[in-house]
Amino acid sequence: MAIDWDRIGQVAFDRHVEALLHRMYDGRVIAVNGRGGDEGIDVRVSTEDGLRIFQLKYHPDGFPGSYRGRRTAIKKSFQRAMQHDPVKWTLVVPTTLTPSERAFVDKLSVGRTVKVTVMDRPALDNGFASHPCLEATFTRDQAREAAKDFGREQALLVDGDDLIQRVRALGSRADNIDPDWTWDFQRRGDTVIQTLRPQHTLAHEVSPVRLTLTTRPEAMDAGMTAAFTRTLGYGIAEKVELPPEAVASLTIDGPEWLSKTVSNVRVIWQPVPYAAPSDATAAAEVEFLNSEGVTTGRYAGRLITQRSGELGASLEAEIHGARLQMLVPFDKRVDGTIRYSFDLNGREPAEAMKVLRLHQRILKGGAFCITVKGTRVGSGRLSATGTHEDNTEVEKLLSYLSDLDVVQHHCESYFPAPLTYSGEERIDLRIARLLIEGRCVAYRSARTVTITLNGLDSPALRTVLGPQAQCLRFGPSGFEVTVGDHTLDIGPVHLFHAQVTAENGRQAIAALKTGNGAGTEVIFRPQDGEHFRLYLIDAPDDSRPLVPVPLGLPGYTDPR
Image (cartoon, rainbow, N blue to C red; front, side):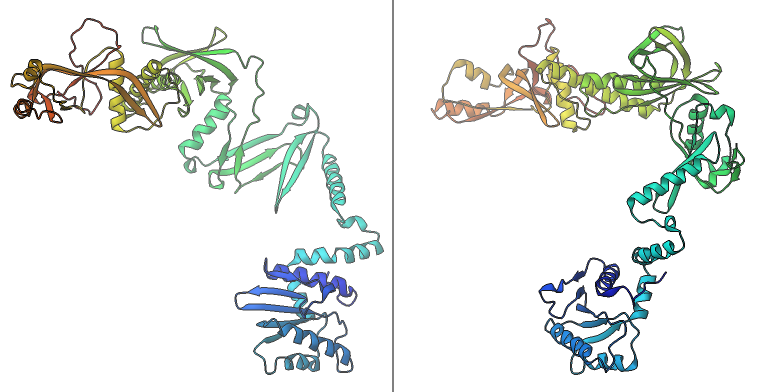
């Protein structure tokens, strides 16, 4: 229904045109309230070329020469608008101009650089036709009045309450289609979503609905196939999505009004999640066994759900904060599987090690059994899935976490384990652990020790500065380890070596003889290119000799 320009009046005309201009020039339109004097501007639009002014005149019957007052008013509005230096001025009227009227408008720009145009009735109709939703908004009242004339008021939506009533009425009609099933529906943009809902608890028995899905296996990747196996075969409630190219057909068998076969359809399979079982907080435990049936590892946690499908049973549990999903086939000849999702971020070393060791067990494979509240509910065998590289990475991370756990306990400073670290941080962390455990290490950063003489001389000092190698010990000083944003001080340490000589000992002795020894720097170096040794002063004394032990880090060459 077109807008009735002849009858809408000045106020409605202004509203219509302003709304249209907002659609045409999104975000760049300013409508001027003329109560304080519009200065020749009804609507102004900022464009890349400059200011554009629209002057609105509601003259349904035009402004012929006999209506001199109208032409005078238009001319005055134009002249006031020119004070703003527009690049374009447009007269908006709800009528189709005659040649005389158009000639009058064209003459306004004579002697000026401004471009003058007209937006008349055909241009307005075309503009609203380009924005049908806007046109429908403004013609709603017209349609309502027409509908009243024919007793069809309910064919229109008047306001929000009317919309709600109409939707409810439509829902009631949907409920009347079938005594057992109905449609719930919702609109999202241009998409209407229908959800089949039973009208009573026995609908699936009285009027069963069956879905037959025929797939194209060649179009399904391994992930899709595995997901369907988990959901249908073991009862796992997870979302599975098949694109149209993987669906040959979907047949719905049920009431006549519902039954049909469709193709070229995207299928989303998402079972309703099971309600948490009453024993959802029950203790669940996974146990790993060797070939003789002897337990080699046991991990306890909390049951989440137990389900079953056509191929076997499934159990989901939380163990040390990680999620464990176990699939146990009914056929004992088929290996079971465990899906394990975990995140080490934010965990302290001790907890992270438990999670990682469970991951390591799963990578290695082997026999396992599951118990809930002390009762075995399933068992199976896992295939080994970890590559040599996988197992190596796990061992490296476990080694790092173990060292950090020892150092944190010693320093009584606990924080989540940083999962990235530099080579230097890793080496110092291993050194710190060995020192805490009472070991002695060759310190890579101590090939020499430099001391400054204070000028005092003595026979003992002359011996140390002499050519014969001596056993020297320096200390104490703290040993700090940096891990991420944390610095840990394990306590005072001694630096020593049994065969040390002074590189510039003769020069130092000569300076002492002349009384010039004060301030002389002496460099001490272990013989045979070895490094100084390090040990923790407060470490337990196990009476073993202070012989440096290797760090045992892959890719690290221990200093001599």
